[in-house]
Length: 266
Figure 1 (cartoon, rainbow, N blue to C red):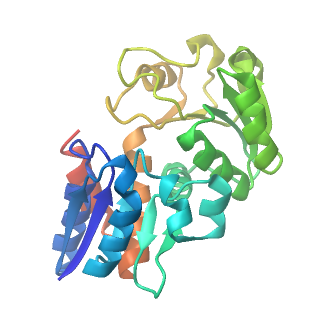
Figure 2: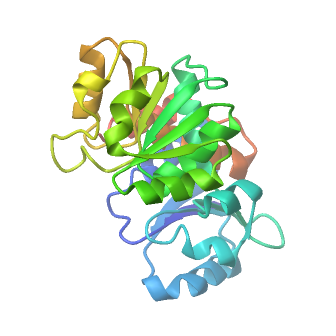
């Protein structure tokens, strides 16, 4: 039996176990997906222990995504993003990958949204914002990053090919001609709030929110109300898991089964 898992602290809230186990059941794969919650200062020992125990693969979440970067052989994308969320132990050396970027792009494409040539606005320059911005740029989009602290947005834009950084006060102007808007902040998770004024939205926008609890955020309600295309955060969560599953197993993921397991718990 192969063992996969999630490394983070805390991890009790994670929806990854039921999503991955649904895939194993659907494809009759002899595997289990478990959670690991090491102390912050024990992350190196956790990676060494996972390798010694024959763990097949790990997802990595807060607060360890940056910590494990130097403990694995990170691929080019993960190195540019500066974070690893998937580790593959199948080789002699554990390799690190970032499926958040690809997951976000697959979520958009699942809704028939063209990314190549699109004008995209990313709100937030933290971990999710970094991954999504690189994903968009690599897929051919023009990326504008808007952040509460403008200097942070500009610093990220200096790393992302062709991107530009702005403060939140530029959102209305940026969105006027935009095709895609992605909220990569946590705004909307704890309160019925949105990082984007409703009057800045328009019907030709695709609006994705990385927040998946609640599934329908105020931003997505506002987007639907004016005729824009809403894409909830569970799609990004699903597809980053799909990418990890396919990397680990070499099998085509049973997306419907994984999606059903995920949404049944939201």
